[in-house]
Amino acid sequence: MNKMNNIEVIINNKRYTLLGYESEEYLQKVASYINNKHMEFKKQDFFKSLDSEMKSVLMEINIADDYFKTRNQIKEIENDNESKSNEIFELKHELISAQTRLDAATKEIAALKQELNEAQKNIIRLETELMDKNK
Image 1 (tube, rainbow, N blue to C red):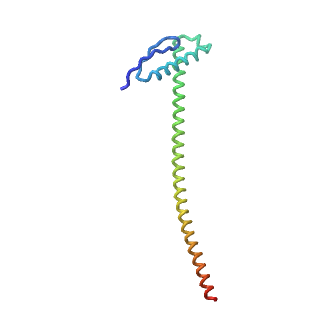
Image 2 (image 1 turned 90 degrees about the vertical axis):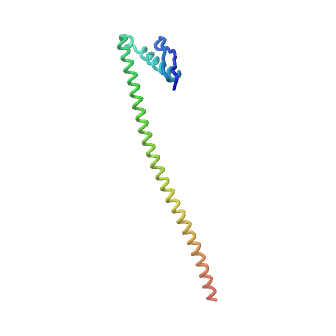
């Protein structure tokens, strides 16, 4: 079982203690994301005039927006991945089919070469017999 990690982070110039089973690096990454959101909003003039509740709601909406956009991107990537997997499957099927046809054609060529070789030998034999009869 994973151990509980306890890490101190700074978010919006305040010190917080985060507890979780995730790694310290992950918890720090989460805190950094939230802190960057605070800094992003502080740069906006309108944000300064909002009360603390409205600031919190705006941050929550923005984080939820990031979450849903990322989730949609993941779905698009998964769909694209599935589509490409299907395309690869079809290409592999076509490749196997082409290889099978190539193998059959190669065998047919070999058989036809053998047949041609036998026919040439037969022609030479018949020509030799014909010459022997004409002498």
